[in-house]
Length: 309
Image 1 (cartoon, rainbow, N blue to C red):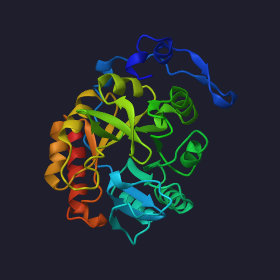
Image 2 (cartoon, rainbow, N blue to C red):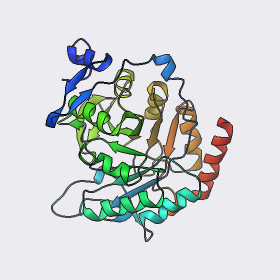
Image 3 (cartoon, rainbow, N blue to C red):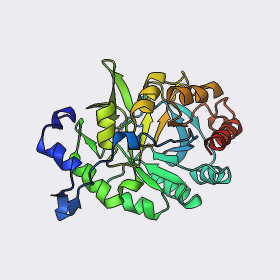
């Protein structure tokens, strides 16, 4: 059943009015309180910040073409890697801390133990300054918070079999707290609409990004993270249509990732997103083998913060 079909159902009512449900494993979950008005929520301003990233695959910091990442028994023959760093995830975390950057994303691109260890080392290096994603669920979410993550980032656990698993979403928001949950709504275009993709960005869900869906999901998350998967890691330029959609309709802070190539792309995101969409940059940065000076992006970030004051 899609979100659109839920509007007239009792389940939709359960999400918009105070009530309670019984979650799996016998846990009792309190539903989220009644939503605040859309006008009130759209007054939230991100201030257009740069959010740094640390993508980890098999323990190494890498930049990849996102759409090529798969779970494959044959190894990494399909994976297209743009860059692999000699520096550890913890070293990147410390650099971000020294530069005063907050809200960065540590993403474990695989479920292997080396990637988990590297992610935890990064969280220890910059406690409270980074969010973590990759294989997050109700059983391990709090452990990453305990290790120093400010938020956990979730996609596939909530978007199961192409649909929103409402019970999982409720339970996760209850276990970790709405204020520590980021929903990754990374998407690909399908029939002129943006569909959320899961399972290493290979599987289309039946959830399409629009005002109604963003309003609904914002009841359970503190932020959204949205990769434009069709341009992610390809340095082909940003998806301005997607950025504009997020700027118009996201009622909570949202970060866009994908296709940033030159400094001008940062300004394009600022304009298309109406000053309400944060940005992360990966493969284009010189610290990840690209041509875009990291120090220039940090300077741009500092300028945006000054303008927002």
